[in-house]
Image (cartoon, rainbow, N blue to C red; front, side):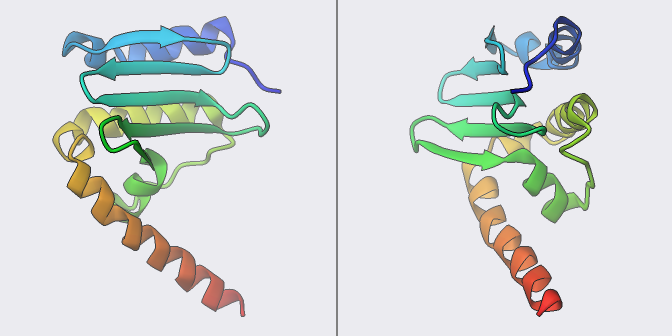
Length: 128
């Protein structure tokens, strides 16, 4: 199972500093770094049963997570590779920093869901 190395952790904390600067608290374990503030959590890390990385936002009051990588892709055509684990996280943290107002808007994330589903459906249709 892939775990965050000390170097990965240092990089994530450095690139996520903008979140602590605006009041998020940070915690971490062997797989994830979590930034929390009020009713929002960013969960950043390596998937324990896969060789990929991921960044999610959780709207705590709605108990609904969203995948920032997918949102970045369907909204702004940001193409990343989840298998380039640390680089993926850095790119997505930069995306969050640049698009913070939108990303922390529940409605914006919710409205991204059908865009993601539409993209996936088109890919499936192409393969048939």
